Length: 85
Image (cartoon, rainbow, N blue to C red; front, side):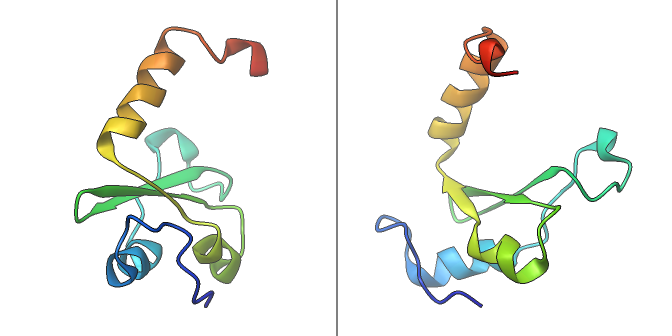
C-alpha cells in the first residue's frame, strides 16, 4: 500500500482508514466495475475509482470535507461542468 498521505490537514491514521474503508457504489453502476465509489469517516469523504486495481485505487484515494464536496455537487447541479461532458 502507498504509505504517503498527501493531505496535510487529514491525520495519517484517518487517511489510511479512509483508503481502506468499504466504499459505496452508485445504484446505477450495476457492479460494472467502472464507477466512482464513496465512503466517509472522521468528518471527511473519500472517493475512489472502482475500475482501478485495489492497490492503485487505495493509492489514488481522494479526500474532501463535506463542505468541499457539497460545493462541487452544487456547481455540478447548476451545470457549471456540463461543457466537460
